[in-house]
Length: 152
Length: 163
Image 1 (cartoon, each protein chain N blue to C red):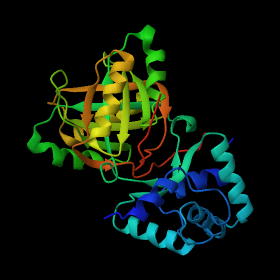
Image 2: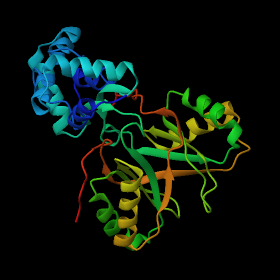
Image 3: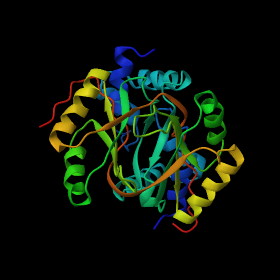
Image 4: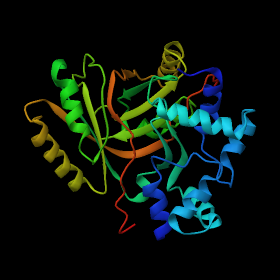
């Protein structure tokens, strides 16, 4: 169960996490609780898989290059193919979607050459062709997410 | 632009800020940098837009947002910036971007909506289509069913190897 403190931490600290020597202490002061309570609550959110991490969101194609990749995989083979693909450290998202193209994953690499090498390797490993969809322009990328947690 | 130390710092911090009283000092130890320099560099990167946001990265599914629709449209290239801008103004839209068309995939505009259930997401999508004038363009809605892997974007300057 999420406590009011958990909910505040989830919703109010997605954008401007304090950039100070004692950020958790700053949050504690803002919320009127102790630093220890904030640290404990973040550990709980982390341990229970409610947060992926506290960290930066880096716009695509500034540090490395990324591409969305789609594949059509027969249902019977999907789990095995998905597992092979997820094993690549360059793959960060891997989802099944309801479509003929049913496997969608994102590959991130330090340069285009590396990106293409990974995709080629995945095609060889899985024996399915990959449709490569690099990012051309981002209008809006992961600027946080307002959670409605009244019933969480 | 990013210098070598910025890159090193981002490589460490993107894995997650430690949950301890002085997390920036901890990150500094990993990349041989003073705590104050870590904070200064991160502040600058944020100001420059090389860090879009710094904070909690939630896992939607675990928080009850299990309906995730990727909607794709085929819109004329000259309208895409305007339409993308319009779509992005809706609070329920989490991502919106342009990708190239492919021979068997005529779509170029992508929009992601995370919601608690399909009915809500479809309703929001309808609202979006009406408000942005998207009804005449071909589209497909791809709901996600299984999540095999979800992790933040991990960038590295190292050469990665895999078996």
